[in-house]
Image 1 (spheres, rainbow, N blue to C red):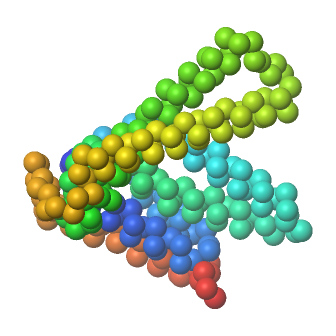
Image 2: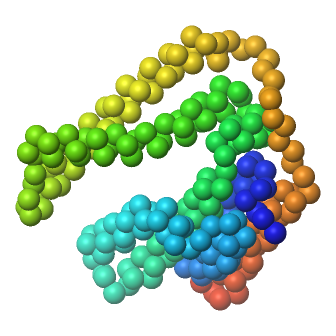
Length: 241
């Protein structure tokens, strides 16, 4: 079974189903069950756990920062541990399906599926494709910024404050460059008629088959089991209670 070959729209729909189920409760049981199921099916998408870890390290850093923030600003740190655990598990369980979906999806296939299967406007789908194509350039531009500063002798040494200040400066430079590139790309796409409103055709058909529907149904089943386990354990804590 190769889940990586499933329709991109089905992958996104499955991720959305899990996300919706995991945000309705604040307990750690539901995301723990969902996360265990997500990790179990990773090999079915043709992804090695090591490769997944390399893709998910920014998420791990973000989760660590969120948990540390909870502990730093909590009045009662003993009782905040459960909330921090629930938050960490939920962030991982919500983000992991998206990471898997985008890691196993061709950008052009995604744009075609959004237009043909999800019935989204072509402007939005093609804009998504263009943005995705630009993501690898950010890593290359970050490397060039780092090398250029090193060539000019800009080195923070072992000073953590200077290192943080240099990182913030480089990040701002990267952001400005990304905005400028996005603006030029948007103008170029409009000049080529991408916003003309004309009916567009697709060169490659994206079919939504029974196996794709089964993927979405499987995600719904995992979500139901996770919520049922939460309720059965007595840990269920509705978001809007």
